[in-house]
Length: 109
Length: 113
Image (cartoon, rainbow over all chains, first blue to last red; front, side):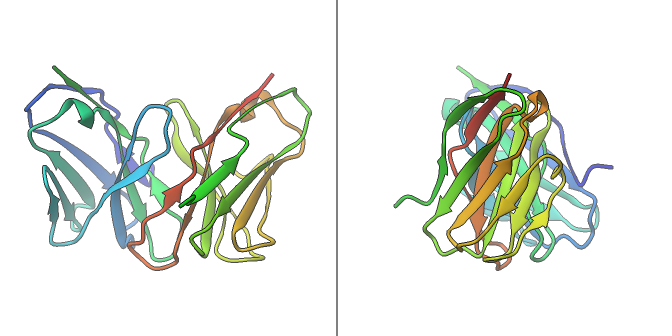
């Protein structure tokens, strides 16, 4: 089983839609969780960290379920500029970040 | 504010040639990483370093060597390039504390023919 698994998509959604991505991780000792965004032919950039209590940043909401070992990202009111690949990232203490393969989102006008 | 800088940005090598990719960061980060990204494979860790003078193997280390002689630089070497090493290489750095963001360089597109 891969350490971090994501549905590769693509998710094709109309502008204004709400879309959710899930990610599962296998290491129960994982302590840090993130969502990164990667635009085509660009480097990954941090979108948001994921905290145990869940957290929100504008149209983006991240949730963590430790019992089921999954992380989610919800995007409300999708914009064309949200089109990108979203990477689920997990770390156990001071070990290197482990990336999922990413979920591709296309927001269509 | 440079952040993480990779050199070169593009390179074409012939099979068997050697080269070194340079990663430099100006954020005084302890941790540095080299990843490769291939279509459908996501980011895979090649080698990483938790401090000056230390290196460790990642998920796909074969065919690569690294050195971290100075805290701000992390070098990735290919001694004898193979077509299977055609990829996009990303360097990243981060502080050692939990929940700290990793910053990436812009990537190096390497083609081995």
